[in-house]
Length: 169
Image (cartoon, rainbow, N blue to C red; front, side, top):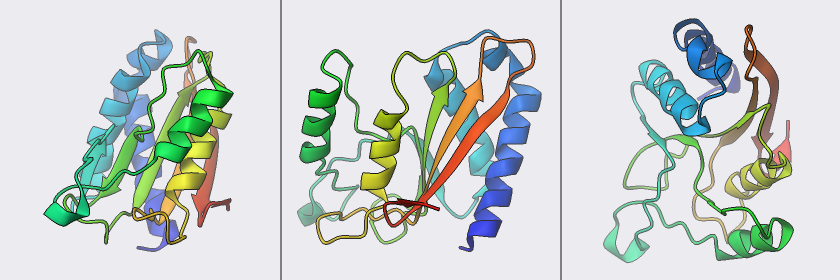
């Protein structure tokens, strides 16, 4: 799918979140509540895909079910960089086809402006998940980092960074 088409679909989903679920952002509620609602709007846009939050389909390729999330090195690196953080290598939101790694379209990491965890954590995950080397069996076509202004009367999207092939684009 073309990046411009994906971008327009993501924009509509974000617009719906800001319109219909502004309360979650204004009151600085948990990031999972925000990503869940955003995923619902993304599912409306990407009808031909599955949209999942914190998907952990950690099943071996031998079974031909789920995703093979062999991210031990990433998790180890993040533990060194963020020793006091709870480390989750699962993406906030993915747009994909369940049960195969042949149709992993989009990975989204969401950050609130009030988060105490550095954005580098999420940016590193986006680089790894969009990598196209032999070591990465997931190979997401695109990744997006979204940062929302939260805890304010006028919440908004304040940052969007796209990734492809482990690079910012």
